[in-house]
Length: 323
Image 1 (spheres, one colour):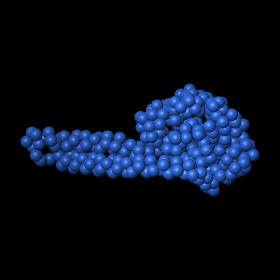
Image 2 (tube, one colour):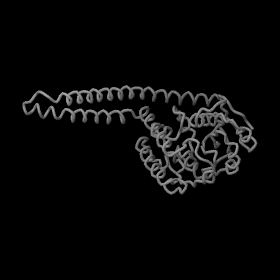
Image 3 (tube, rainbow, N blue to C red):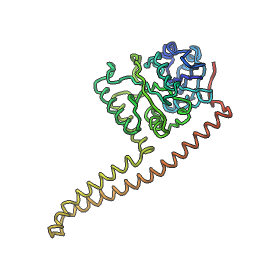
Image 4 (spheres, one colour):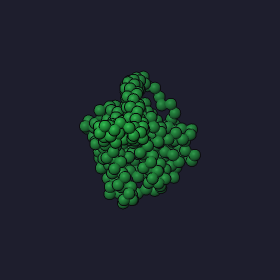
């Protein structure tokens, strides 16, 4: 069994050596452990530092393509290099590498396909009370959206079995954490959580400059993903709300009409008509999006088969440097 530990990087030459120094070279029940760095168009010497510190393979983009694209490229490269399990961690060493054996154990034992490292964000002293609260609310929303029992939805410390990794196909470029959970649910993969320790941050987050930006970007990501993967769950309730508001807008006119007064309340009639027409349009948008989702499902299954064929015939990664 071969495990690949992948690290997406953007200008991480300063912090990468400390992260790599903590990574294991041997794991229980595993024959080989390989390290893979995805250099997402760094302007520093991240690639050279990675190779000098023992990284086995580097996938390098000539320009920045985003965290989700780097994560996807790492998954694809690891699979083509023979990975049976792919572990993803961060370059700033925020995740305690000593938890990797526990992270892969459910996959090695055959009880899970995906394992997410739970940082217990509610007790992280470094997070403000507001951020802890938002983390808890966000995870609850993602649980409902994805249909999984994930306990730390934004944790990037994850392990994927070979079959699970084959079925990850990201569309968003900003972050992979939420979309991959939706795909785990759609593929009926078994997910479990493992408690992990979080190290203190050595630098501010490069994804979120502020709590407000964190909320805004994640909220927009969830809306986009829900439109793509759960359209009727979003459009149908919205359509029903508009229908209800339209009925309420018509209520004064209906009451007056029931009393024999069929004149007046023109504003009520117009507002109700606008709301009901909007409700019908939203419902139609939902039906169209649902049809597109069906096509996406077929495309995902086709892509899964194509990737499986590529692995069976030994197609190499497109871009990588080997130590």
